[in-house]
Amino acid sequence: MVVALCFLKLFSAAAGNVEGAEWQRHAIDNTSKGADGARLLDVNNDGRLDISTPWEEGRAVRAYLQPPVADVRALWPSVTVGNLASPEDATFADLDGDGAFDIISSAEGDDRTVYLHWAPASVDQYLNATAWTTTPLTASKGPQWMFAAPLQIDGKNGSDFFAAGKNEAAQIGWFEAPANARDADQWKWHALQNVGWVMSIRLIDLDNDADLDVLYSDRKGAERGVWWLENPGTENATAAWPRHYIGGKDYQVMFLDIADFDKNGNTDIYVATSGGGVLRISRAAGAAEWREQEIPLPDNTGTGKSVAIGDIDNDGKSDLIVTCENAKDKYGVFRLSQNETGTWKAFDVSGLTGTKFDLVQLVDLDTDGDLDVVTCEERENLGLIWYENPAK
Image (cartoon, rainbow, N blue to C red; front, side):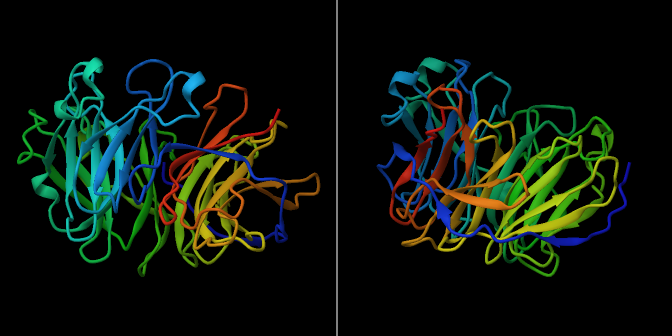
């Protein structure tokens, strides 16, 4: 089903000043430079989410195994799975179907290659750096790569994955896994659309046809905004994926999150914008039309980078956690919550420490019943960090 779209822009009152006290910050890893995103997955089946992170200036891609809760406030056990120039993104995926979670990393700068980092088959060897091998993906060389998202697309071989880049020759599309996933020369690239600078790729069934579509945010270029690509089905995977516009063309859209924020049965999209507020793109119950609402950022904050949706204060209502760039001596991580009249208020998370924060994730790391905040900071080298939610 293809949904007809129309747009109405709405504006809400500014959030005012940031209130409250900052949360306690814990370092997962602060031993390198330029931590640039955290992707979560339980890779060793212990019920705890683990993390993959690229260190851009440190020229490293690392995996972290979440320790037992008693040790979660200390540095986490980690392994450097590969050393390369300008890694921008790293995400877990079992690419060869051996049950071990490998890592896909995307490199920009002068490197301009997607790398496959092959995990050891034994979980006991996961933190042994010498047990990992790294392979550059032949078909990827050329563009600057920014983000990847694994998915079995064509119903054969191992996991395929979506990828997208930025600037010249940038596209969004997918890499088709060959019969032997470790043969880097046999992976095939299927380009779907030209793009300007993709920030997010999220997989979600937007047309309710039981397969996953591709939702993405493109921050620059003539066709910037939030878009989705309609999955044509496994048998037609190599055909065109129809593209549909959702919103945000008047903004520099950054990282996004998706949830049924107001619990009306429809998907809501929240996307941070650089130079603007948080953009909400939503539909009323039973409606086909998308509507835009800009939620202005509070005073004395950086520029929007990422947003995550969750009930932060355990009041039964959804809140937003926002991270920012350009936050020197400003608030770089904070919570936005609505009061009974619908007015947004802002509450401190990071204090004034940190300048360039990145992708934000919400997870209860200390198992005390509230959502903590996981993110990276790459200018003051706070590193891969989490903020402990003080809610009771």
